[in-house]
Length: 499
Image (cartoon, rainbow, N blue to C red; front, side):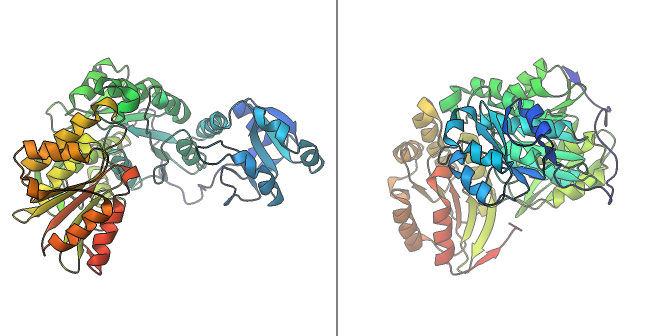
């Protein structure tokens, strides 16, 4: 393992933005499409040009190429005729769907149609080709927790100096990542992308598509165990990113995470560590939780600077250090990094803090959940509520496989140990959470299990002014409906943070 201490900017793009340069997507010719996808031309003109690439028949422009993706719900091939009627002149389709398409009619209209073995793979190939034909530098971020916050912080830091493209929303899979990279134009200087996964090999595929200059792993914990089997399986799956970093690129890794450090020891590229550890190149000192945010001293090799985050949670400091490490490697000054970090605000459903008109404080962390993020959120509730009553409303943590009952039981125990006044639980594993809390000496009268609707009704009868309520669960649990119910009950919401 080689540690990068002062080798900033090596092979990374550091030119200043130019107002003349444009950041709109690059055009494609039919030949470009064939070269990228290795498909076969079924009909149409090799020289026809397309302004961009789309998979959405509802929003596609007549100048775009339509890639017919077969999704879990919809098959894009069923909309092929529709997009042609809308004026689209080019399509990429699966070879096994060709017999169902009106190729003769399209040939007469000079419609371009390219056949490929798999349109999802073809979409990735187009994105990889687009990444190669720009001079952009790419930072790719993965990890069990904190991917989105770290990605947003990193983009916010890099935007202080560079034209930066970043993943939008949760577009972090084999379809979402290509859609992001297909937006790259010649004026972009950096791209910050998030890589998600739930099975082995997925990060490797995404890494091939984005070919990162910087590969960043936030942490490794018990998430997606259903597809990965164990935390060690998660470690190996996340570690696939290191194999895809470009020559002379950098690995940015968490010095405070033992499993990430195991990967660091096997890394072939230079490693920059971040964290509170004295071994970290980018460190945090003097961390203090000062609701509604966190302050710390950012320590870089040449300088240190005070940073005040506008979002709660001590764990957010780790995300900020990861973003700072990327900014440092890209050549930003300490003050530019500080400015980017301090401008960060959380995405909807990710540790958003609000207050109702009847003075109920809500921590909305409903976007998703796994054991590590649930424990971190409980810690944030403890910090923010102070001496006031705390309430946890928890839904199932999905994709934990055979370990789900035990991990839900552990969360119940952690909730009880935090000293909350009341625990509400819904979902398949509600009884496990309740049992864990009860075993950790939380009285049964303070534990409520039931549907979202029953929980919301009981909350309305039980909550008092100045109570703090944390609502969290996996995406499929739709825990945001409880947040919305509390907000509507409280009549209006006054943001505490810029959520």
